[in-house]
Every structure is written in structure tokens, then in C-alpha cells.
Image (cartoon, rainbow, N blue to C red; front, side, top):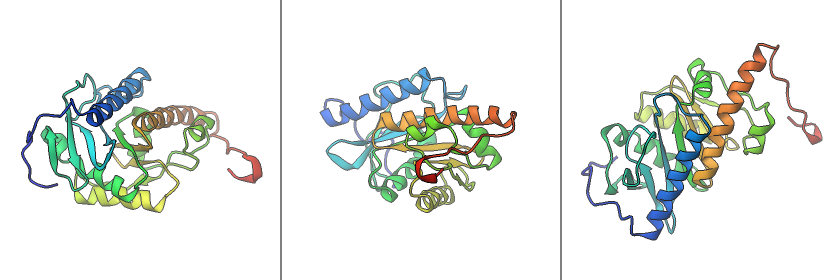
Amino acid sequence: MSQTPRSPAPLPLGDSDVAAARDALLGAVTDLFASDVMSKSGHGNASVRVPGTPDRLLLTSRGLLRGIGPEEFAVVTLDGDLVAGWLAPENEEIVRMHTEVYRARPGTGSVVHTHSPFVTAYAVAGRELPARYESLLRAGQTEDVPVAPYGPRGSGRAVTQIVDTFTANPRSGAVLLANHGLLATGTDAAGAARLVVALEETAQVTLGATALGGALPLELEGGGR
């Protein structure tokens, strides 16, 4: 990320595109907490493309999503430059985790990172999350969710592992971050949040099914899984 001041300019909330992006992220975060998929700490971060300016993102300013307010956002470029708003130190280091996913997947409209407990259990175990729950498929995730190998938070190694895992699994809308959490994408903020909810529900149900002998494969039309 470029070395820029943490507060180069006030967030231009009068700008209708920035305001729309802000409202979309606030709505997505509200939905995540209402669905009870967040960790006890409320840790996470989220971003969305600014409408009309696809090379700029609106990113949450701090490392906790709980209680986030309308001015706790930053506008950053895909090059990682902070152009408006502010970033707390813990979020300065994760900017590339977001920007590089958008670069690798131009169709991505939003990226959400959480430590949702049941999904994170799979990540900590280094285990892919099986796509054997119909609700996950209806959320657009039709294959097992892969695990990106561990890299220290915000490091070049971590970003490379995430991008490589997405690239190797072009049909997956999410990756698990080994020993850390999850990263979900969507065409918009609401879609990314829905995928997080589906992932957490799937992880909980799958862990419960394990005690009953394991989740059964889905038998789809045409013989596919």
C-alpha cells in the first residue's frame, strides 16, 4: 500500500455514489449481525466498489464491524492509495487483501472478511468446507470452499495465497483463510453478506452431521454433485 496520510480528506458523504456505497455496506454489516454469524469480538472488514468509479473502493475503517458508524469508512484506489476518509492501523495492513481480489476478479463488487466461528473452525483445521447443504448452493457456492494456506495478516505472502487460491478455484465465491477466518465475495455487498451467512450455517450444519456419520453428497440433476 502507498504511504499516504490516514486522513487525507473528509469522506465525501455528499457524493451520491459514495453515499450509496456506504449505505450498502452498512446494510450488509447490519444483516451479518442480525443473522448472528459474527464472532463475539465482532472482528471483520468489508469493502464495495464505488458506483461509477470501478477503480475505487469503499472500505471499513477499523478492525471491528460491531457498531460501525457512517463516517468510519475510507475510499481507496485499486493501487492501495487512501484518497478520502481514514484507516485505523489494523486496517491499513489489509487494504491489499481487498484490492488484489478485485484485480484478480473484475466481476467482484464486494468483499467481506469475518471470523464467523463455525466457518473459522474449518479454517483453523485447514479443512475445506464441503458444499453438501442446499442453502449454500442457492447462495451461489456450488463447490467445496477451498483453504488459502496461512500467511501473516496483511503480509504479501497472505495476499498471494488468497489470490492464488481464488485463481485456482474460479467457481468459488469464497476462500477460507488458514488459521484465520474467511473471505467472501459477491456482485454487491448484500450478496457477499448472504454468502457469509450461508457459509456459517453450512459449517454449523456440517459439523452436526459429522456426529451422525457425515454429510451426504448432493445428488443433482444430470448426475453432478
